[in-house]
Length: 62
Image (cartoon, rainbow, N blue to C red; front, side, top):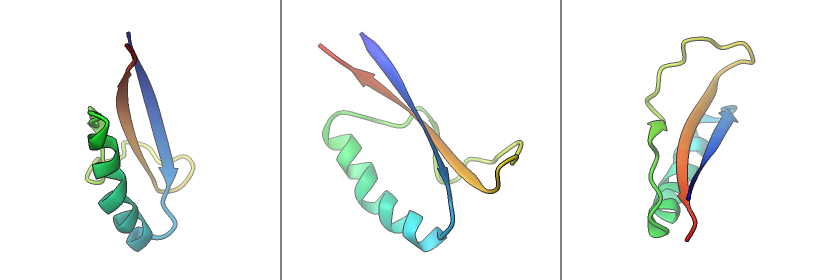
């Protein structure tokens, strides 16, 4: 069964986000994970709580 994790970040320091993505992406991929929506280049249609970044990750359990 596949579950989905929705991650929303409020970006306060773009340089720290770049550092996080450099290790976070490979860590997710190591476990056969992949982002299916969102990511660092996603365009926000609304910003009610300030600048945010989001991603949707499918998580499969066997």
